[in-house]
Image (cartoon, rainbow, N blue to C red; front, top):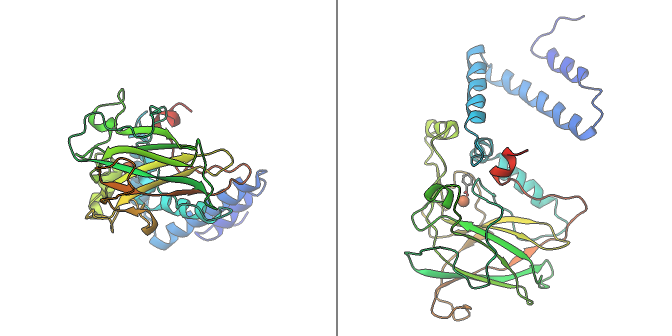
Amino acid sequence: MRDLDEFTVTDEALAQMAGTENPRLKQIADAAVRHLHAFAREVDLTPEEWLQGISFLTAVGQACTPIRQEFILLSDVLGLSAVVNALHDKKAKELGTQSSLLGPFFREGAPELPLGSQIVDKPTAEEIVIYGRITDNAGTPLPGALIQVWQTSERGGYDLQERGPDEMDMRGNFRAAADGTYYFRTVRPLGYSIPMDGPTGDLVRKQKRHGMRPSHMHCLIGAEGHRELVTALYFGDDPYIGSDTVFGVSQSLVVEIKDDPASPIPGLRAVHYDFRLARQAPGESGRVGADPTKMAAQ
Ligand code: BEZ
Ligand code: FE
């Protein structure tokens, strides 16, 4: 037996884990151990700080409920979710629309509505249209593609926050028409603060960050044989467009509401955005996130 120091314990831990059968688990667990040990050495982690870290992660777990996933929120504010999205986009067989965060407010089972429907139950702001085409990477329409959208209200709250878990509002699912077009009515969502009433919010406050996300519309798009696209459209005139707390904004996803003679609902200002789905590689899954109610059930 050899005496272990802060360096040799890393080799010893890796040696004990060497028999891991699943090669991907081995790769991930080995790298996690190497990086965690290097992190502790770099900051010269004290026992008190180690315990604070354990308490923090315990609080993150305890803040999770059937409608709240605090670990995903933590991953988001640390930029980890954005890194995973960027890696996922890089692995696509071909270039499609860029990904963005699913966020914690996606719900399965939103109503499927006819094209052109208003997704806000009682709109109190200007109605606008969001429209465009869903195609493959070559521009061929994907009829029947399912686009699920969800957003905050004109006041900046999701239905879960404004109306509780039993009601759905400001969300809807649409099927693209034969020529790939989709369109629906909504109101401009207001930017909002990420949930700040838990341990992740405490951390963000200590870091002197504003905690805001710019105004956006989430979109989850699926079509047979194509990679599911998790993305969002960001309204370019929002004051937080350049400093999103969860690093979800890319230039290619920034939109503007315009007077638009081509709008499918004349008289309403519109956002025009065409989505391109990449072909799917076998066994590929594209969601960086989940409906929190489904995660709690696992
Ligand atoms: C959202 O867009 O809804 C969101 C994403 C990440 C963290 C918090 C909220
Ligand atoms: Fe959001």
